[in-house]
Image (cartoon, rainbow over all chains, first blue to last red; front, side, top):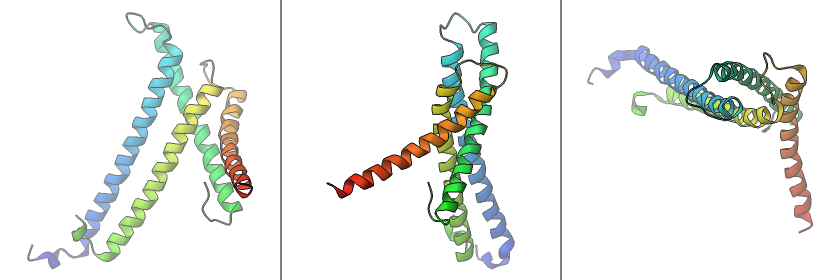
Length: 98
Length: 82
């Protein structure tokens, strides 16, 4: 502790990077978890209307397709929303927005 | 943790956190809209989203936001007459 000054900027820089990386990866994880939860909920509703003793082959096929379709839909929604936010903030002269 | 950072680093970090929070809010909105639009637009699970499903998803997002703006505007209008 007494030779704190000797660490210089490097150690603090590294520590800052570490904090930023941690925040980024936690956010990415939370986003992925939310996506998985939504997919689980939607695809269960669509593909397993009458739960039997096990997931049938047909249900599994449906689930795989449903996962892909949900992610496609997510990308379309994301693109549309981001375009909209950008358009709105241009109209408002860059102030505020949605 | 914070006492290890000088003032410039703290400023940079708080700016970074603000940006990440904005990103998280944006992603959360996308989840909400996707939830809504998927129910409305994707009725059968096929091998690919077709044109009309894609259009429906995009329209749902845009009209939902229009609705939100409309409600705010409408409330502002009626506020004057109350």
